Image (cartoon, rainbow, N blue to C red):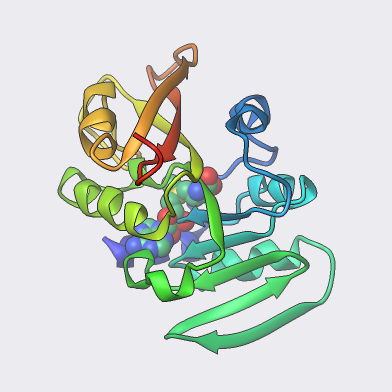
Length: 210
Ligand SMILES: C[S@@+](CC[C@H](N)C(=O)[O-])C[C@H]1O[C@@H](n2cnc3c(N)ncnc32)[C@H](O)[C@@H]1O
């Protein structure tokens, strides 16, 4: 599966990439209550412009992406000096307040996540086959501190193809409710192909949040 993603990036088959900031992020992020200065984890970030929007809204960003090419393209299309270094087996690029960790999200550990106070998932959960989604939800919960909010944009589709895989509301709740308070925010209008995005607000449960 990971080789398939690298191949997609090599061949430029990145139909999931948007050339504008996702309107759902702009619409719902402000109400999540993440304070300015809160670092946002963006799992499986690709070269999403949503990271620039978060940075412009005073959030340092920590993106994690398997394909080094995606990260190189992101910084090449951005502005500002780029610093490169290695840490914990990841190749990291930093540009302004955005740090991009090149490697496998599942190898990113809590020791590296200490400053994270929020997360944003657009097309990360739905990039994964059903057998890996439980692992994803659990790993995300390990990285996010109690009380921290996140925005999830999931997708349903009329067939069982993928990626992107369809993840029904019931599965979103089953995956995340053990560790997060889960609030459904909206279902977008269906696209011509029947795909339909949904937005969810999540808050990591913990001693003070239940
Ligand atoms: C559907 S794309 C979404 C990218 C981005 N979130 C966006 O909205 O444009 C999924 C991304 O996850 C990356 N990916 C897949 N498995 C990964 C893993 N285990 N660790 C890190 N990145 C991964 C792929 O290379 C791909 O760029």
